[in-house]
Image (cartoon, rainbow, N blue to C red; front, side):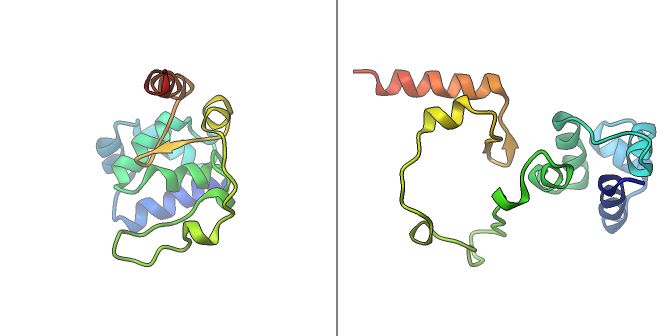
Length: 134
């Protein structure tokens, strides 16, 4: 069994779900879910992970980190607005960064807990260019 599959099975069981119930909630075939959990299939694609996360009622970023799509060192957990945030802007380096570099890079970018596609990043860059146009 692979580590991701083991983690997925653990999450599913913690939620009290059977493979068939998770399949129903996520829209992902129960046979595929079973194969991922047992290691017969590799790590699912991002789109599939988002469906599984929705079925588990967890943030998709949690599965993206576990699957290796996002570096865990880049992932900062923010439980909710009432909890203490683990970091603040003041604690971070105040060096500016180039938004266009981020949008052009292959670095994963998230918006509202959803991984942006290359096409979405390109559209965002175009919108920024329109807004900032003289």
